Image (tube, rainbow, N blue to C red; front, side):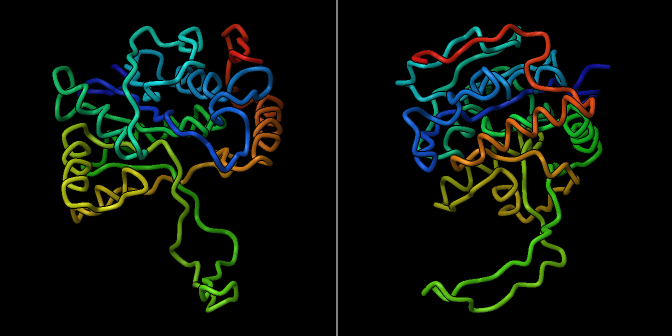
Length: 254
């Protein structure tokens, strides 16, 4: 059986057009060096380990001159122009697939800045997606005490954490549903921060799939060192690690 199972092909959409301003670096975070390779290369390698036959749509800034196709391990892939926001990039990528993708094809959207997702979590998510008519995403229950501020830098109240989850990626849906959700959100001026929130706006409830907490998103400067430690720890514990079987390539300009 194919990776997408009986429901159609599997498409991977990876938004990678962000500028990463919160990193304070001289380049977008997807091109920062992590364990000798660009973050983007690690992320794509990890996805390829789980889904080698999938079709990849990589969303890049039209003016991106740092990208190197040698970092892409997929045989079937294409470049799609990134939009102003993440949702715009994904929506444009889905529109570019309209002539090939069927409504029941499966789509996994994954942050380029999450190179530590494990193959086990990826395959578990895909299995959940096959079985759920709405969709599914990796997530973790909130572990820390959550405070809401009063707008002046002081605590207004403590929020109950029961039932609260932190959304991760990938987030998976059927092509037709996800495209409809994102198109409707854009037309209605609804701000969405992930694919699940667009589907929720249709009145649907995607499935939460518990994932590992080390599927961190590189956002701040300290996250890069933490990701390096996570990848090293995953190698030691035997979890499939990013970049296995691929040559190392340093990002352009290093």
